[in-house]
Length: 258
Image (cartoon, rainbow, N blue to C red; front, side):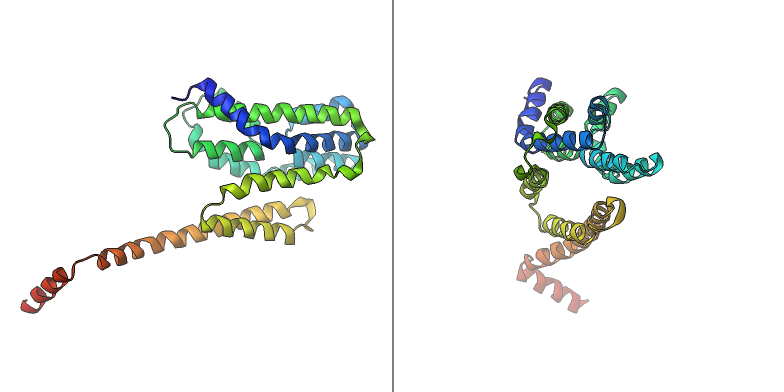
């Protein structure tokens, strides 16, 4: 039987491979923030408070460009709209938790943690401590992100450009998504999302990601709806194929007599 302790450490353990991509991404953020003129305190504070890599990168770039605060906040909000989708997906599994638990897990809900936590919640077992798994995964990623930011700030421009650390995050997401694609609909939606994201990459305010997200959601809903309508028809055909021929003959005979 799973306990809160075992779930917590299982969350940490299963997050370890992902941290290999989180560390260099945090390093790059620390370097970028310092290069944009942010102080050590503000750079670290953003990682602690915002805790959203893509929004942090865009924010420090806009700060360096001296854009108005309203535009910076709006842009960061648009980029982080995907977290609302994560929340809607995972909320049904957290209904019985207290407000304190919900607030804590909401703070830790980022892309990688969502991918790990939702997989655990969807597993067909009766463990009542799955939220501890969520907590373990979230704290492991949060701690690593803070450490990566701090090291990046200290190293600054000493990180060689030929390390190409910016590729680590996309590779991490690929490693998360591909094993989870088991149904044909999931594969189609994933490919469509990737294609739309590439085609919409030029859109302003980094909104291409949101366009790809909503397009894939709509496509997924349409495909699932189509499959649900198709399923009863297939079941009825299968049932008719398994009806013995004698039964069909008897039914036809009764209809003729009547």
